[in-house]
Length: 234
Image (cartoon, rainbow, N blue to C red):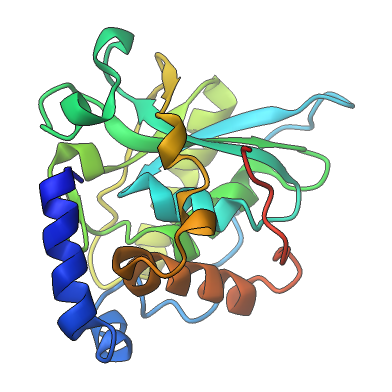
């Protein structure tokens, strides 16, 4: 979000949102997920020994999505950044206009022998984002906050499309999943002050209202996957 919008949201959150947080979350399809979603029926192919793999996901403001995956067992590094647009325009002020084609995204480096690509997606859809929201995520509006899975290989595309189809068929959400699945043409790391933002600013009203509950849901829904000490960029 832009600095002006961030200030506005912070004021609103500080005055009103924190006391009503439980009611707010119960009013959303995302928050209705109190436990883990079904495991993917289709998952990634066996991985090469000793090789890390990456997943690039967009699910609203990258602070919270990064914050969730920094607590996931098997994840080795998570970067906040931008995907979906040209590298020459991949900076916060431009992306925040919603005109560059980018989505705020995270790049997740993980050990496929500890966690599969399908399981990464399962956590993403369970606790990190509301996949039914189109071009927004809670207070943030615009295409830069869209839900999107950026696949780097045909196998990732196969798994992502199959899982979304599985969840839609099972009607696990009240509305169809709006998250897109598109080819990855580049991921560009965000500015340093965005990295590990949740870790460094836990008392910031936006973080405490919208993002810390996601980490709490991760701990509740995936106790075997939750790691208390976050794997940070810096």
